[in-house]
Length: 519
Image (spheres, helix red, strand yellow):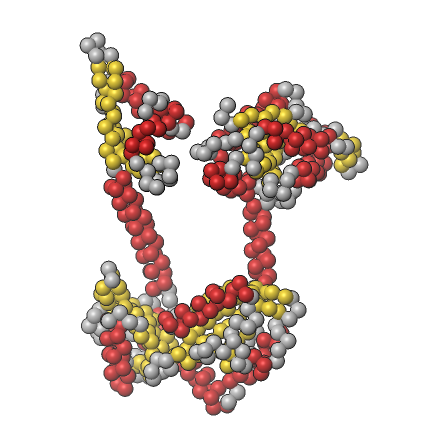
């Protein structure tokens, strides 16, 4: 349903600013209207608002005072100009320039520090620019090559095929093939040349030529073919899992290192489908990645779970590179190299846990509960209201000062445990810092639903305390707010819960105060 102006007018007519807008918005508008009255001059300001459906609009408003015969301001005329389209355009332009700036920086880093030689060519094949690696591969500095044709570097036998692939790139197609270039010393260097069209506004304005020196690779490949010991050489020099896949996704080679992961022998891998031991949840992404790589010729990297013969499902990172035929460019096989990253994943998981949990109690921390509160506020309309409690330990400073911080820490840990044991599975408790804790009670609509939970917590705190052989008398004060409305902010929640906690302390501590948020 589309939001109409008539609907909005019915909602706001005959109402004060405070009834229509939030507290912050009302204060903002009131400030400008007061300024008009005091200055007796027109005031122009920019503003924005959201409809109940979440659509954001921008405006520029001119406030003009009207005076009676005695010179007193009786009315203020507000003329609102809709600047939504202009503002959105400005924001889009700003975002565009930010992305453009970031893209340029990324481009410069990728271009200049790439280990492969990268040429920027015009549509005639002339060299316009190049990176540092150009000199290391060709022997020429980029200044020596500017304005010369890329074919001037190509060996005589490869000029025709180079021109053919260059024309493909001008038409917007990728082209990769093996060829030879002439080094400044006169020696032939075997390279993989990839032509990539440069597109601006969907038009080809130039071509990137990327040279990868494969001389050493060619020597190694010839050595493998001559000795017919390719598998043994790979296995002797590889700690990772190496696999070759054909165009149907069937395994045509698996390194002996696979036997450390699977009970299968190397020869048993041959002919199996490539994701036979990949976790079911990762198979669709794996299949798409392989297919996309064969189609585009791009290398890829993917993290997935692979079945280990003793450890169960283990995280691996797999790198893949498609290999194409030199003559016709048809796909030959996919080289996949996998590495066990289980320890890295476990470390990342621990770091994530530390980022969202209190190191002393193990409970969620302020950052974690803040995200939960924000989500609960956004879901009031669909998932119902809730309540928020703030608690702290009465006279906790006396415990720290008289018994020491170690005992104080033990009290905080025990306090957190007792709170955790009293809340429901759908609720959350977090430590904000010091002796201050917060509880989020979900699906709460009335004070009658909160009181049993509060009293249960109070009773749990009243249970005997024995900390490191010391019998302590520990009590807690609690402030709770219920029924936040749509539009309530997290800041407002904390403010009113803190006021309720203050009232509980004013009543003598070891008690609680519960208040509807909008009272």
